[in-house]
Every structure is written in structure tokens, then in C-alpha cells.
Image 1: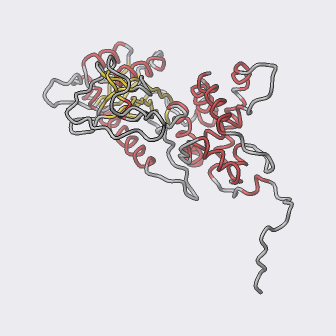
Image 2: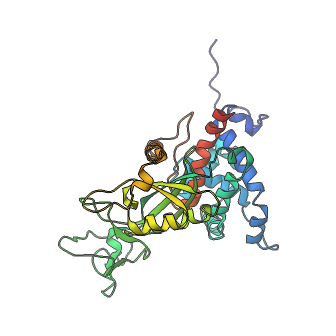
Length: 365
């Protein structure tokens, strides 16, 4: 029997919003972990808000919406609010009612910045990793570190001489609109003489010989080797020493223990000062040797142990997993690796761990 083509259906619904998400959806397990972490941050949230005045967006709902923005790589807050208006799955995860209006995107951005400036991202990552069901997945002996370039939200046309005129090539037109075309051929630009007018903290940097120069920052991640979970992340200026300095900074608090730990890294970290810095903290440097034209800082004291080769192989698998996750797209049964857009690298690290935790916990049960 053919059904009728009813345009609007019933005016009322008696189905709970959580029933709209299927029972085996990965966001169900992720939401339980997120809610436990948010409960432990109640005092930190209270310290950021005044006890009087008009109520703001609940920080718990704000963070859940940010998690979804990272999962599905939604490029702007305006699109997040648009998705929240009609997507029942997002409404259920965030915790808004089916009749509640979505927030204004500018209000969402302002409240989000309050949380990021209050260092909530780092506390959120710590709250996730401190849960008993997550802590048993972590090791305390073996770590890996790596860095990556993160492109700045600034155009190359904004790079101007520091002491030159501000209305040179690439300046915004007086009447608004798109920047005019600019020809930089033959012009020498460096971080000593030029800077971006829209993002002065960004630096001109390139990944290697033959690669294009971009305005970027450098992101760093510290991973525990047992299951490849990120335990720390930071964003620094892009330069040739940032990777090693950030690695020493992130591993130092974890090296304060009677038993020595190991740190795996690629050959870019094979320098005498970095290896000596690790050994002074009683951290065994499982660093890949760089034998191209100079003497390696890794000698037989480290290479003779079987754990050195094992650590390098584990680090390689973790690096390949990051690349594979970055190619994912939102699907029915998977959630992609979140790109650190405007929400901060530490929060993106927390979102990355949340992607992997349900599967890891199911495998270890």
C-alpha cells in the first residue's frame, strides 16, 4: 500500500531527543567521558564568571559544542550555530532542548574566548586523562614527541616592512572588499625586516628545502606510547629551536620520579644540547640518529638497548596514525581527527583523545 505524501507531519513529538541517536553511536561513549570531565571543572568555571548579572551560555554546553566543532571540522562559529539549529544529534550532545533557539555566533565566540583565556583547555585535557577508566590506558615510562607547522590565519599580502609604509602592496582597499593583487617577485622578506600586520606573532617559515614559505606557528604534542594518547600540547613561535625547547618543557614535569623514563623523537631532535638536557633530567633519549654531514649525539649508551629500536618503531606508527586520522571525514561510524582551527591546540589534543578513547576502552575491557 502506498503511503501518503504528508508535508509537515504531526505538530508535536513525543520521542526523547536522546532516542534520536542510535544506541551504538560513538558520540554516546564520548559524551559520558566529556560529562565526567566537566563535572570535575565546576569550581574552575565558577571562578571565571561573576555571581551577579545576566546568565551567559553554560560553559558545559559551550565546551560540548566546541568538541563537536573539532570532531566535524566545522570551519566557523556561524556554521556551528547553523548546524545546531537543525541537527538533532548535535542538540542532544550539546544539551540544548529541541525548542531552544541556537545562540548568536558572536556571543558564542566571546564566551569561548573567555574559556580559552582562563586556561580551561589544558584543564579539560587533564580532567579527561585523570578519569580512572582513562588512566589505566596510560603508561608513565615511555613517551614520544613531535612538532608540526600550523598555518596562521593571515594572508601573505599582510607581510609588510616593519619600518616601511603601511599602505604598500597588498593593503586593504580604502572602500573595503578584496585585497588588490600584489607581485612580490624579487623582493626579499625575512622575519627580521618584515611582519604581518594582521597577525604580528606569526612567523615566516618553511618546512624544508624546496618548500614554500608560509606565515605559521609551530605546534608540539607529547604522546604516551602505550596507546598513542596525547597528554600535552603547546603552540610556539616557528623557528629552528622551538621543537626541542618545547619538548624539554613538556617532559620535565614527568621526569621527576625515581625511575628513568624514555622520550622518542625523530632526527630533527638529534642535537647535543637537547640530548644532554634530557640526560640531565634522567630521561633516556630514544632519538633517531641524524648522520647527514655531522656527528650524532646518540651513541652506544642508548643504541645498545633493545628498547631503543622498539621506541623508534612505536613513534613511527603513532606518526602514521596521525596522518591517517587527518584524512578522515565525518562518516556514519567514525569521527575524524580534529584540526586545531581557532579553538587552541590543547583543546584539539583533548578532542583527538576523545576520538580514540571509546575504541581503546572497548578493546581493553
